[in-house]
Length: 382
Ligand SMILES: Cc1cc2nc3c(=O)[nH]c(=O)nc-3n(C[C@H](O)[C@H](O)[C@H](O)COP(=O)(O)OP(=O)(O)OC[C@H]3O[C@@H](n4cnc5c(N)ncnc54)[C@H](O)[C@@H]3O)c2cc1C
Image (tube, rainbow, N blue to C red):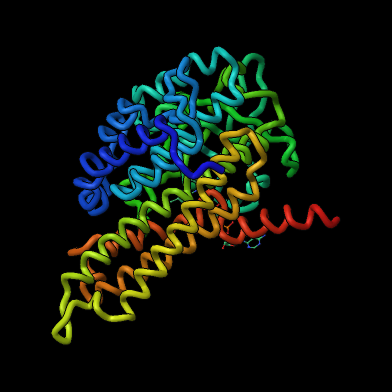
């Protein structure tokens, strides 16, 4: 793996870095406090080419690749992690359409997503009774002539109520088999699709997370993404890439926390000297920086394999479990270095700690990542 970024990757990184500093960071505390969904900021990010980073140029994407995407997410998450998750899910939906969609679907939906006509797109796999065991989903899609009729409830949907397009996994064959699941593209405003009130979350409060209720929602057959029965494969392929994004997001949040903690340690004086002069604080900073560097390499390696079209499930799962668990620890240390002040809203580290917590949960919990990794190891011996 070449560790140097290409000119294109550097350009995407610099654009994201500027956007994080100038657009996201100034509004992050307010978004969090007021649970404000940043639709205008998301549209601005699209205009900068940051929606559809890994989508072909002919459909309005930046065509910059999976490494550029990971690098951009890490930068953006340093500005506002809540805004960044809406961007991540939108990129994941766009990539999924680019990979599995028909020519007509790509032409119809990708320019709108990549160009910011809609602030976001949503990925609807989870249900109230089907989280880690996503293949147990019970939302149905029943064929009725030229349409499917969708019924069921999707849970935890990022950007629910704001998205212009919903990518929905539903069962086209009864039973529990993962082979009976198909994927549908449903536009906002389609009768029978409604979003509930956003969940009252611990963190990522700029990102609205809702249920999506489907009641006799009629979807034209041409809005099915790929063949009937491949929906679970579509979802797992999307999540392999999504986990690289979550790794990068966790690294970004932890980088912001470490930077704030290092600055604070040089300013805060106790016992007549800056607390940065104590070995205890220095070791916390050193451990955090070391873990960030290891995580960065794992994340880039998984992204690089994806970019080359090589298998990357194992590497994406390893990257997610390492980066998100390290990032949680780094944010805890940042609060510790701030002492009591870290426990207040005066400093951003309490928000970083709340925001980073979910990275161990969504797009597959840490436990599920370990299952994926162990399965890959054991494959060789069975
Ligand atoms: C803020 C937020 C945003 C989200 N956004 C989306 C979205 O946009 N689209 C979407 O489809 N979903 C989304 N999700 C859902 C998310 O992916 C799920 O929450 C996650 O997959 C876990 O499912 P669950 O919450 O049902 O937990 P459960 O599956 O009920 O798990 C509960 C606990 O049991 C453990 N566990 C379960 N099974 C096993 C096992 N076999 N072995 C070991 N441990 C196990 C889990 O690791 C966890 O610790 C989001 C969730 C959150 C919180």
